[in-house]
Image 1 (cartoon, each protein chain N blue to C red):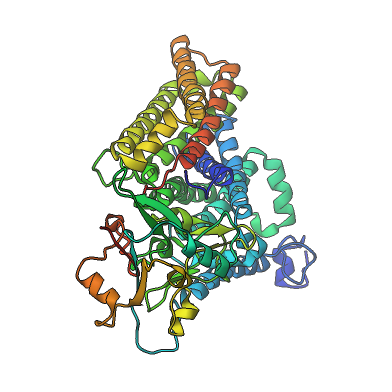
Image 2 (tube, helix red, strand yellow):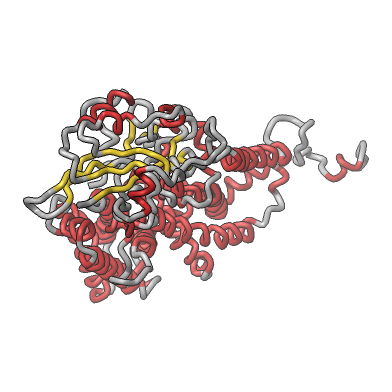
Length: 318
Length: 238
């Protein structure tokens, strides 16, 4: 197994995806106008305010995982220079995305709590004429592009090592030169984002969420199904490579990662939430308890997936 | 109502802040802070990309070094590994040289693997700070002062030749004992090999043994399908 990246990078990949996904879900609700059809929208509130801290904490953990870069933090500025490195792309993307997340969170909070905004504009008079909703929409539009970039680049980062880690560079299908990881990480990011901003927020705060978003359980089930298909294709593609790729695949499903995979990811992250949403679809209602259950399952499984993929990386036998 | 001046007429309650008026963050200060931060990031990036990517040796002739390992002669005694560890002050459980088996069962040959000093080195491509770089002589080196210890190069190397030093927080690997080599000598591992399984020389010298072996095709790259084009390490597989 590869020895370089363990829990801290896995948590960063997870938080980066969660923050990006939460941002995208909130952005979708905002830009489609759905946010303004109701007095209170927990999805945009949680998505906008949590995404910034989530990605920022992930980035901080990553800095903590550095060697000399932690001892001499100014070296981190050197990381902006090598544009052939996906890690440099990432640090630029995050440097732009994180402030935008905080801006979105701040503006959303100001719309939800106008009395706080009054106090702020009283103090900083030049903000008085700021068109909050318009600025927020611009931040959301630009931020959505960066959110997709954040969700995708982490997959590109690990797939870019090519033959050095066959599991990470495995294609969407044997023989196809399109790597699976960028797509899988993006889908997982959106899925965990939905788990946080809908299951763990709207379902708890709004008892009648089912009636407000009729297609909600179907969207969830599609996302979960898609993630299952992509992971299945990843395993098939990696196994098809033989050698280290096949060892990685068998490590995940039958080797020392099998408990984390089948219980931590498949059972609590795919099967359980899928069943909960299927039941909600049939019953026409979604209890807060089931929302918490499926939301926690989806979110925790996102972390498990990242960790399993890192830990199952096997370099080629020479 | 009378006002002392136009500013006061526009803003009788002093809500429009300027740098002269009371405490609080003015728009100017905010913009300055943001620009400074952005310039710092850009400066760091420009600085690291301007750093010279090559180290010039004392000679102006561009050398092309080669180290050939004859797997038929290697017994896996570990003398090369010991010499390397001694040279680089590595602890017992760490090594820049790994021993891999090669060949069919029963007829296995020993194959020491270390940094191949690739012409298309993935470690150089992925290093965000450009700490890893390739000299004009084709030697891949690590500038310790730039390395942040992200270990991306470690996972990017298909030969798993790179090692993270937890104490210094940087990644290290075979550096071809460049100080010996530039002085006309040979790397410690070559010198230590008792069976003569390691040869060292310059490919740009057509009379040399290494040039003969590489040009004839007897000495080959290890796993050329990785696409990294090893440029210094070659192997004779019998």
